[in-house]
Length: 263
Image 1 (tube, rainbow, N blue to C red):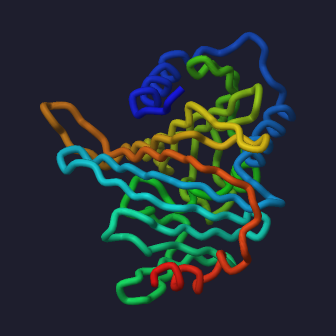
Image 2: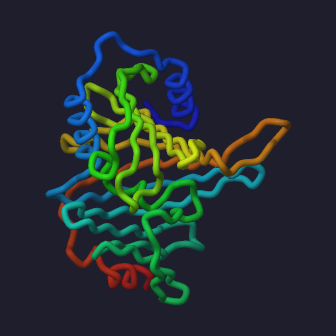
């Protein structure tokens, strides 16, 4: 099924409406194992990952903007490179991570600027950290968990509290489908309990036996505009295609790669 913004929103809304507990409850050890599996499903250790991304941000009252990019990841070494291929005004810009540092490259002045995992990607609703493997089982403790239905997916709903200072959000709610350990929805909260962001991942694609999101929708629950008396929040839709796990040259994960591509 083709992933559209309408489909993603529909699944998210259905999930909110159907958070009814299931009869059988998972044990504490099963909950921990499923959370670790959810992390593992976002990591492609032992292989390289390459895919094309289309990132469309909708700012109510201001219109939409789209960014095209190619993502390269080598998760076993915590390395990635993102090469922006469109629009024309941004072509050649990029990000590279190695040695636990993220650098942003602007071809106009040929300069690299240090950035962070918490920084927004191209003025969208997503953080740089949303594009790399998750480590919830390592950086959070399980405050509570229960079995629920999220639309058609039987899930475990976790409430997680941060145990690491390096995370983006101190508290999150996470919906993980029981059958396959895939993340279906995430809500990010402040320390005071205010909802900051909502992420929906309604469908995945299978490539070489691995599950990769076909699309994601991220809603910024803080930034928005009232239109006709109704609050409309900024949102970013991500579409992922042309996924491959072929090994990439080591030079891809370097500043030189971005400099060469800008020429």
